[in-house]
Image: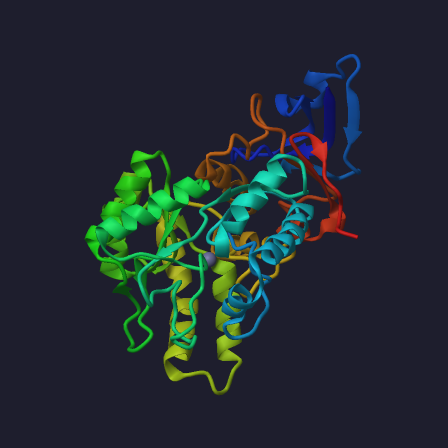
Length: 412
Ligand SMILES: [Zn+2]
């Protein structure tokens, strides 16, 4: 048994913090959490005290990362990494990124596409205890149409890449693509049904047909898997939700009727605020950026706050997904998403629940709340994140426990 004690407990459920708190753990599960005076010190329990003024809270969850990519800030860096680094090397680098992510307090992540399905293997290596990392949910390859969001042009037409992108055509092709990812070991399916136009000013357009989206969703759901969708907004976003997509990523532009539909259907919004900030800042800092790209960066950056505010009022379920690996480095950047939820009008307590309990619910991982029965994924924070959430980004102020086992503090 382990008894964690701290001046305060944020249990992830959203209620006010418990002062003078303790969390009692047996094996890898929480058996009791609340006031230290009520729990006492059970005989034989190992006592782990937080520093004075410290906080106990659930491990963080990032529901949108790309562990295959480094987050290097350069045009098309992620495509170059996918095309030039052999898949075993991608997996080895990803192991390092996973360890960095964990050391920064993230005990669970959802990986949204990786060349060669490499992160499925990393997931298994972590689960077997071969390498240190967060609990991982992985989709294998994201599915995309020929020339689509995940199959962008730019390579000579005599080049071909095996298993770098999940290119599918037609409802039958997308069903086959879903089955191939499930055979490979995917935990969920990633689709790209709705994008911003690359050739004109439309902020949204269909990339997949409604029949294709529906076929992919039906196949995934039949096998018990959720579907996460890269989206921009407008009617194609609404159609993707109607066709069955369970989580919409980015989703910069959502009208009120669609927010209502999301509440009704329980669809998750993953607004990826951090990557929007980073990619827009990069584009707007390039004097020679194409006018179309510049306009998109301006519009998405300015419109995202109003969209977030309406989503909050409508009661849409939201989760924290940074898109780390794309314009953002693994570890230090993930926590920026929590700060941006606070900037967008959520309280510190709400933002922490979004980045813990909500994320675990989305991933269907039995963690994210420090209550009896849950996995003991928890952080000891040196300080009070309710006064300043920025301290969560400082790994020097965190001790990270996954299934009650302490994780290495930083890679050497
Ligand atoms: Zn992404």
